[in-house]
Length: 100
Image (cartoon, rainbow, N blue to C red; front, side, top):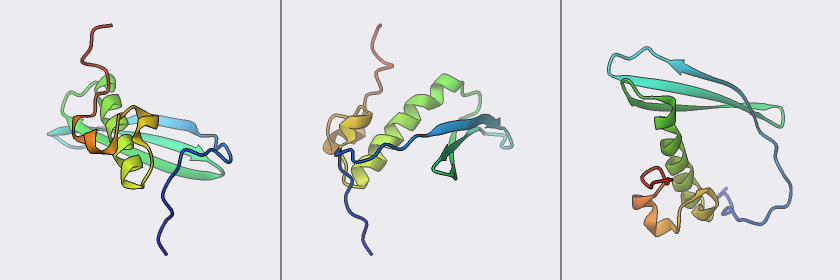
């Protein structure tokens, strides 16, 4: 059965809680961070991997860009996570290149 496309019409709110964020350092060439999220009695994990020596503020833009790509792939509006349009995901701007 095909999933219906995502929309921006909020019918119910889902509350999420991050229960853990920890570095997983088992690879010699890269660093990994795991985020454990809970919602509705379910537990989800998101893992981010990057170059060795990656700082915690380095993986946040990667998660933002990945979320935008996932929202667009599911038929939703990626602007809800900061992207302009689905056809501009290849140049997603997380804002960390601009001066404050």
